[in-house]
Every structure is written in C-alpha cells, then in structure tokens.
Image (cartoon, rainbow, N blue to C red; front, side, top):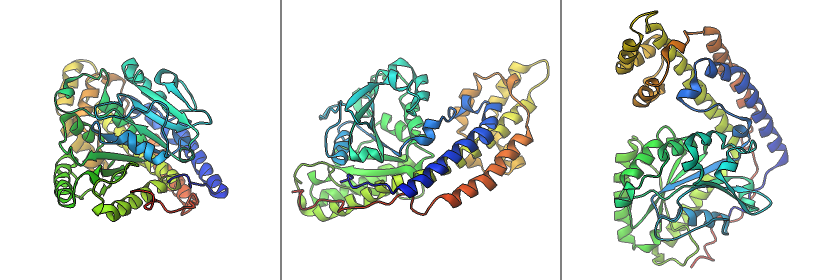
Length: 413
C-alpha cells in the first residue's frame, strides 16, 4: 500500500539544506525573542534539532474501538510490537510507531532522554504519562517516510469518570502542534461524541488544516443507513469543530476483512484512494510544513512579546503590585484590545484568553520585560528576507513518489 514510497536523492538533499537553514534561523533570530519574553513558559517548549529533523507524523484520535490500531496495521500491512486490538479500550497508551532496523519497544522514560527523538519536552507530563507512552520500532518500508502515533481510546459513558492521572488534552495539544496530519476516526455504529472526545477535539483547534475525518467500518451498514449516519456525523462535527467550512469526511472500512455490505465498494475504494493520496503528500511537503509552522510560531512569539511588555508597563513600581496583577489578569480582554489597536494585530493571533489567565496567575510580573524593538526587528527581517529565500529553495515536489495502484480492489472481497 505505502511500500512504494521512494525518495529522490537530489530532492532530498535540497530538503535537508532547507531544514538546516531553518535550524540556524530559529536559533539565531527567533529563539532570542522567545527567551527574552519567557515564551516557553506560556506556549511551546524550545525547538530542538530533532524537531526539525523528524519525519512527518500522523496522529490518530478517536473513541475506543473505532479502529485506530487496525488502521495502522492496514497502512503497514503487518502488526507492530505492542499491538492490541479488541472491542473494549485496549490501547491505553500513546504509541509512536517508528522505523528502525530492529523490532522492539522503547519505554517512555527512555524515549524522552533520547536526543535523536523529538519527545524530550513530554517529560513535563510526569511519570503517570511516561508509563503510558512507548515507541514501537520495526523495519517497515512505510516508516522510512512517515511516523504514526496511536492514542488511547477516548472514553465514553461511565468510563469517562476514570482519571487518567495526567493531562491527556495537554499531551494531545503537544502532538497536534508537531504532527503533519491528525486523523479523527469515527465508528459508523457509534457516533455519539462523549465529553472527553469533545474536549480532545477542542484541544486540536488551531490545527484545522491538519485534520482529516474518517468514518470507519462503513461496510457494516447498508447504503440507506450510511447516508443517515453520514448526515448525523456532519451535524455533530459542525457543533464541535465550530468552523464555517464543512469538514471533508472519508468513508470506508480500513481493514483486511471481507466487506459485509459491498454495494458501496466503489465508493470505499475511491475514498481510500483520496485519503492515501493526501497521506502520501506528507513527505513531499515536510519542509514546507515546517517552514509554515515556524512562521506561525514567529507570529505568536511577536504577539506574546507585545502582550508581556504591555502587562509590564501597567505594573506599579513599588506598592500594590499583587492587587494590580489580579486586576490585569481579570481585565486581560482590555489588554488584548489595546495590543490589537497599537500593534495592528488580529484578535485571532492572540492566545486563548482563559489559558493565558491561568498561566499568568503563576507568573512573577516583576520579571517581565518592556518592549525591546531590536529583537522584534530581527524577527521581522527573518520573516521578510530569510523565510522568502527558503521558500524559493523548496522545489515544487520535494520527493518523487513512484506509485503502484493505491487500492487493491481485486484483493478485497
């Protein structure tokens, strides 16, 4: 299925040059601004070389028994170490499925100290999370080009009351920021969106361009039922995603079992082709995505600097600092409005106000810095000159993909 992924050496060299330049630009021009205004305490940790070097990643999210793990097996055309499949919640951990010459499992505590892996910042979520995090390695041709992250089945009903012991949505947010695709899987028999699933989807906001939705196990219902289920799913997603655009839903049954109702076979094959074409574009667009993410990060870092300097400006020199801090946090909305007016910033570029208030409550406002224009000017030049130069270096197709037919329709009964 994906075993035909191949890289063209000349194009790969260009991509590596672009990523090397991105590392230098980040360290010399954007990182100083982030450190000066404590960006890493509020938003994303400092980027390491491994973040730039990492292969494209696909994150699978869905309620339990929607077929996430089976979907991975379908892509790889084989099992992977630690695989567990069943009708009840079987995947109770985050599993990064990655390439290696040897099959094996790397536990979470070892994974976050490996400088070659990009998972070091996950250490902050503690042992409760690290004990439920692992990397499954295997010599699959598919994993030479991409990595896949399986997530715990999201709970519903009474099961939601079980405390996971770590910040589940926080971990999802961390992955969402770094992956190239987020696949939301739904079971055609189980469309109810639980509270935990709703919170998980909300944690993915801001990454709408990465989200793809899959209605799985669609062969288990007949054509008329499928149309009803599809309509119900679109209605539910519209309420949760809260986006003006109608989300694209891929319909199919991503496993090797015979189709129960094969009246929709042609539809499933076409949908599968479309989804796999989208996934096969990920290695091709890896450098472009990282460039785009750095631009988004730079814009957020600039807005953060404006916001922190505005709060610093409002603080008294000697008396009443604590009461003023509480007042500023309470009235953060008016600070946001002022930043937008004075610096021509879109309100959509500012971070979520409730989260910002929570983080600010634990910060020492006396350590905040006033606006340092030279740091901001360096970032502006980076965006205007360096990023434009790198955009010109990226070929229209970073990798040449030689493909056989994506869907083996004759083999699926």
